[in-house]
Length: 326
Image (cartoon, rainbow, N blue to C red):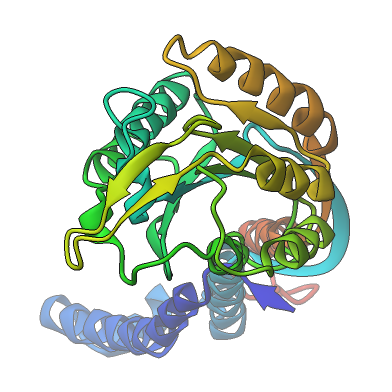
């Protein structure tokens, strides 16, 4: 048996106090009666009063009180199936903040354009839970899944390449962090990966398969161009050409059953991505069945009512023997 509000049972501790007050009231009655009449008159006054039935009435009221307290504690046992409709999706944005995201082959730069696109995406969402992960050589859960969309936008606005915990680009680490953020095996989810696709490890495809096994679909958004742009390492002064690796992002999306989109200044891909997500995900995340305890408080409420009715039917009078009346 499960109690929804077990602390309510503390009220039962009042029962001894109630019994003491009832006993004290009887003694107080006798004391006050003796102030106005001789004690011998009390026997005459109470000649029809039955101590047994009076005690029985009080006993029934105490039992009824105990059952009322038990009903308020909401006892539960047995199980029943209950269908719960899901009103939203769990969506995590995984955003590349590596040094290559400073490239200006898309204006004003890759990271700023990515943040603008994701913010526009967030504005289109209503009842979904959102989260944010940033990554470079390591991944950081910047915002766990939440329904506070304004908090998500504040986190997005704070992202920069300076916030990277470690230099480099390892998409596999980001997908590992996403698996933790979703809660491995907890249910369907959507991951939106925004990156230029450069990856220093080869683990991203295997990690994407792991997420697909947890019913998480990955949609990738590529930022940058195939021609690329020169980026400069601020610490070493080294310059190199950074290009969009669309093929890698396409493979990651395909492994999980998602799609690849290219970020453009017009942001037309946002509406297309939204339609794909809601068409693919809503149908499989619309409802689920859970086992819940059955509420049984009504049984105790009925028992309390029965005891109260019994108490009301009992008269605290002595039974008169036949022939006692003249």
